[in-house]
Length: 126
Image (tube, rainbow, N blue to C red; front, side, top):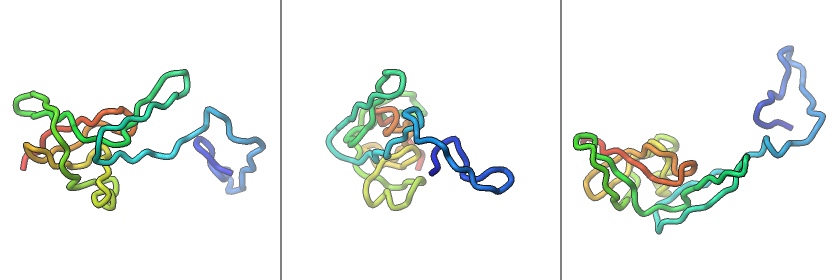
């Protein structure tokens, strides 16, 4: 059994046998892969009683023009590139670093939609 924070083997190469089960604080979750669609958020209670918002689907992005410094809420038309996984482009999955098509041109996602609950982007020069 292996989870975050523990290696499966010792420095000597011997196997480390875990003498207990997983603890609540070691818990992880399956990723929610945000897609293009009608806006939908998921609220998760996290450790410490706080809440984390996750984007399940997004139709709009807050796009900033670096030249003027102005931000506009624009519709996401398509996912053009995704450095995280090339297959995400076909499935229209939005992650940090994705290049999206908007009404005023290409934009790169700067926020982490699955962590922050918003889609922020910055206009890319073409």
